[in-house]
Image 1: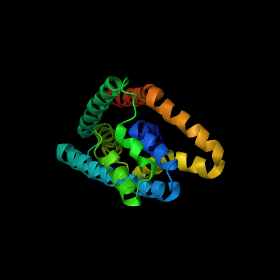
Image 2: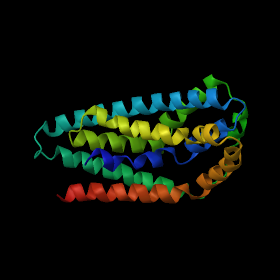
Image 3: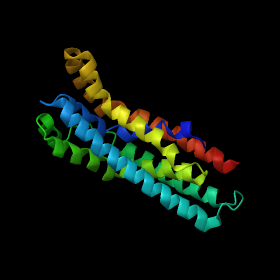
Length: 212
């Protein structure tokens, strides 16, 4: 298991209300301040959760067998990660038809930075799917003795994906205001398919590790 293996799961992290909220904020009256605050909250929530899960799985690994690679502790963590990923796939599939935008998102046209920060934090920390993905990423790296800083590229890529709406607005101007609603609609309707495919690929990688 290496760093590049877990990076595609960043898409699964943002697919759904996280990216849709970023689109709404990019179209708000003060898109720069709102989006920066939103990204700061999301970065804090993601960084804290990844660190906590990493420490938890490191503790599990040491408790189950210490640093002995043949102790079976790595496979134990792989089994846990596999179970979590399968639960994520079931959750994504069950929510696939819920494409309507939540009513509270329509109130993001003029959010205060404090609200945007809290929204970014909660959408990461309070979403079961995101927690499961972060647990899978942290568990996979911790179980294979990767250092903590290997979590940082996953964090950076997640934030970059969430920043795409405001970056598009800054780079494309008016053209972005026309394209963003289409992106929002696509994310509502089709992002679950790609999320399932990405998660399935990671499941295959974990199964391959278990078979070794």
